[in-house]
Image 1 (tube, chains in turn purple, blue):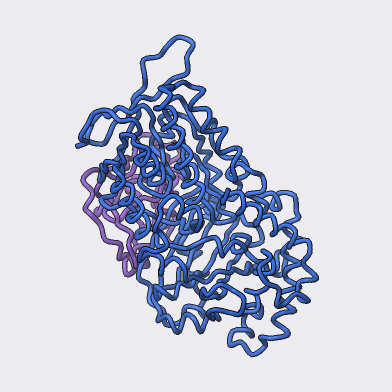
Image 2: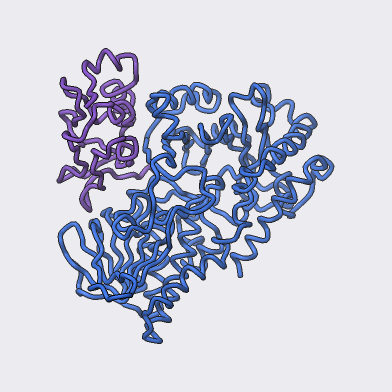
Length: 111
Length: 464
C-alpha cells in the first residue's frame, strides 16, 4: 500500500540516517550498557514506507530497505536514545516501542 | 530478585516522585519496594532539573547540606525569553515566571540528585530493585460491578510481585499507564526535545552570561541571565541556553513540535544546527560533551492528559500521568509532592486497613486541592490561552529595556542582545517582593507584576 521506492533520491537532500550519525556520533559520548534485546519492534507488514522514522530519528538508527520498508541499520539499536520519537511519528502504528531491558541501554551522566 | 513476593507499596521508578513516595512510606513503617529500570537511579534521566527547595528539603532532610547542594545552588537564575524570528517582535523580552521563584527553586544534575534521593529512601528502609523494567500490572479477578483493581506488577524478568498499592512514578512513556489505560497519548500532542551539554571554564561562562555574586540585599547565589527563545508560536519551537558555571557547562535545549517537524520533514539536528548557529556568541570555543533527547508532552498542557489519576490499587505520579508543566519548567517538584501525598495516604490506609476505592480517590482529591491542581500554578499556561501572556511580555520588555539603557550599555554582549545583563535580577527580585533597587524601572510592568506575584502565593502553599 503506497510504498515509496528509492528513498535515497527522495530523501537525499534531507538530513537522515548516516548523515545524522555523522553529526551525532562525535558527541554521542553517552556510555551504554549493551542492550540485550530488540526492545523496539518494527511490524514490516504494517509499514507503509513513509520514511518518517528514517528521517526523524535523532540517532539515525533506521534505514529504508530497497523495497521502501523501515528497518534497523546494521548497527541496530546500539545507539538508540530511548526517546520514543519513532513511536509517535509512525502513522500506521507499525512500531512497537518499549524501553530496553532493565539495567541495559544508555547512561546519562555528565557532571 | 525482590526479597518478598508482597509489599504494602510498590513504587515504580526511582526519580523524584518515586523516591519521595518510597522514603515517606518507609519512614512510616511500610513495606516498600522501589523498582527502577536503571542500574543507578538518575542515569536514565533526560531533563527536569528544577526542584523546589523547601519541598525537597522537607522530604529529604539534609538535601541542601549534602554535597549535591553546590551543584544545585549556583545557576543562572533568570531567563529572558526572546523571539528569534522577531520580525513583528510579537513576544518581545520576557522574564521566566519560574525564575521568579528562584529563591525557592534549585537546579540539580538529576543523575546525581536522583541517586542521592533514592539512596536516602533505601536508607530509610525501602527495598531497592534496580535494573528492572516493569512491563505490566497484575489485575485482581474482576468483581461484578466493581472497579478493576491493580494488585501488583510484572517485571521484565517475568517476576510477579504483589502490592496493596502501586505508585506509577515511571515517567514519560510509562508502560503501566498504557496497560491500565489511564493516560491518553494523542500523537499530535508531542514535543521533541534535544539537549546538548557544552564544556567551558566557569570564569568564561560567568563573563559571557553576566554572572555576579551576592548583590546587596539578595541571597548570595550567582546571578546571571540565561536566554530563552520562543518561536513565533511556542508550538513551533522553544529553546534555551542554561549556564551552570559550577559544573563548567552550558546546557542548550531545543524543543520542537513533533507534528510540525513531520510536516516540515525536518530532523531535529537540522533545527539544532541552525539554533547553535544563532548562539555562537555564548558557545564559541565550548566543547560538546553530551547529548540526549526525548519526546514529551506539548505546551498544551492545560488539562492534564489522563482519564483519571488513580484506580483502586494504583496511582499516577508525575510525568507518568503527564503532570509536567513545560511552560514553567516544572515537573519534578509536582512529582515529589504527589509522591509524598500518596505515601502518606497509603500509611493511613494501612493503619485503618481500608484499601477501598474511596481511599485511593483521596489521592486525586489531595493533589487537586494542592498547588498541583491549583489554577494559580499555571498562570503562564492560562496567559498563553487568553492572550494576556503577550501583554506580560511586552510590559516586561519596556522595563528591561529601560534597565539596560540606564546601566549596561557597556556590557560586552549588549550590542548583540541588548537586554542581557545583571540589572534584570533585582528587577525579578522586585517582582517577588524581595527588594526593589530598581523600582522606578518597573512602572511599566504592573500587569506582569500582578501575575508574577501569584507565584509568592504558590510558594506559600507549598510551604504550608
